Image 1 (cartoon, rainbow, N blue to C red):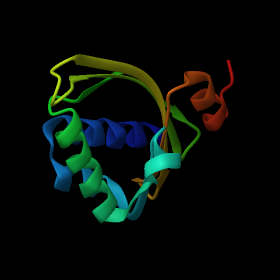
Image 2 (cartoon, rainbow, N blue to C red; image 1 turned 135 degrees about the horizontal axis):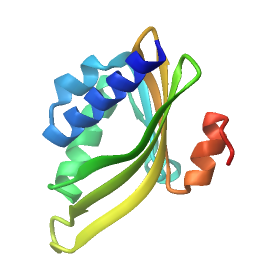
Image 3 (cartoon, one colour; image 1 turned 60 degrees about the horizontal axis):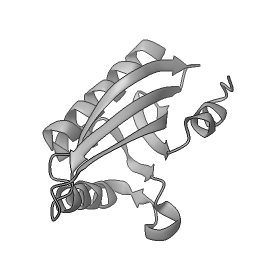
Length: 132
């Protein structure tokens, strides 16, 4: 199942890059939770409505937002770790943006249940149970 989980995460990220909300939601459980580094301020994105809000938020702030994998691996039977390069530019400023994140995807029955995005990749490794 672990390689199938990697494929699900690949499809989900491709859906983000294509702005395909339905395609993204098809990869997720109904109660999916997306926790970004801003969750302490803005809260987590929960369920289909939360994911729709996430897509709207990135379109508003960073219309050419794109994710690319640097590292993608299964961790056990129900988790995937991804090191991701985020690129884009600010809507109002046009200033290029970029970030490197570590994302931990928890899956249930072949669908993404929780995504935790870490700005510190060491924290992502720890969350995935893979401290280097």
